[in-house]
Image (cartoon, rainbow over all chains, first blue to last red; front, side, top):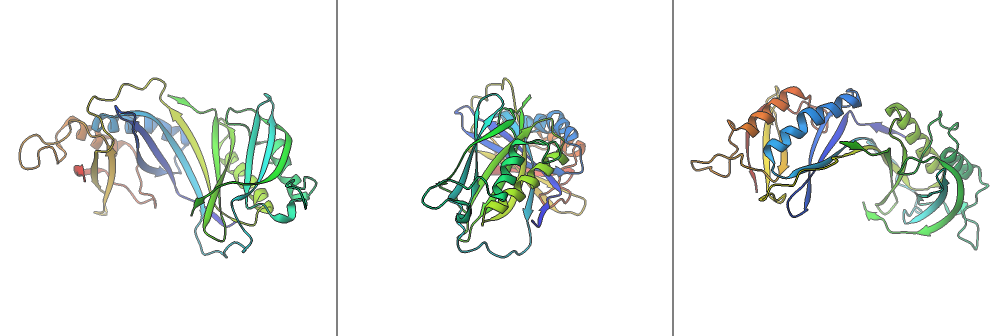
Length: 166
Length: 154
C-alpha cells in the first residue's frame, strides 16, 4: 500500500441546538503534538472559545488522523465490486458477537455453489488469525466496540450489501 | 468528558465503478497511536489480500462525549452560522464556520446583527484561543493567530 499519513489531526466538535438538530465545527492541528496535548487544548481552549460564540451546546468531539492514497494508482480490476462483501463473524471474550466486512471479496475465495468463504485459504487464515491472535500484530489485536477481545471466528460468508457512491 | 472505550479504525475501499465501502475495526483506547497504526496497516494488508478493490484510506478516530451537556440556548439553531475570518503571518485568510451564533454581533450601525463585534467577550475569547492553540489548515499551513473579522454566513 502506498498510503501516506496526513500531517494533521482533524478535530470535529459536535454541537446540538434546542430542536436537537446537530452540526459540527471542523479544525486541524499538527500531528506532531502528543494526543494528550491535543485533548487538553480541546477541553481548555477550543470548546470554551466555541461556546463563547455559539449558543448551541457542545456534546462531544472526535480526533481523527487519516492516511490516504495520494498519488495516481492503477484502477481496481474490472471484477471489483465493494457491494460483494466477505462477512466475518467473530465471538468476543465476553460472549458478544462481532462482525467485520471485507469489501469486494475475491470470488476465488468463495466455495463454488455456496456463499461460504474458504476458511482454510492462507490469506483468509492470515486475516482471521490477525483478528483473534494478539501475538500476530505485535501484541495489538482488534476488539469489539465495547473493548472485548475477539477470540474465535464463527462464520465467514459472502453477502451483497449496499455501498455509497464514491 | 468521557472517552469511548475504543479507537475506531476505518478502512475505505473503492471499486472499478467508483463505489466505496468502509470496514471498521476497533482496538482498546489505551493503545499507543503508533501501535494503532501498526494494527490498522496490518489488518489493511490482510484485508487487501482478500479483496480486489483498492484500499484508499485508513482513519483512526478517537471519540469523546460530554457526560451531561447543558441545555442549548432557547434561540439556538444550527442552521444559522457565523464565519470567523482569521489571518496568518503569510497574510492568508482562513475561515472557520461555527453554528448557532449567540449574542456576538454588533448591535448598532449598518451591520447590526450581521457583523461580529470584535470587542465582545465571545470574539475576545476566540482570539485568545487562536494564540493558545497551534491550529492548522487541512494541508498543515498555519491557520492564523489574528481574528480579523466575522459575520453571519449566508
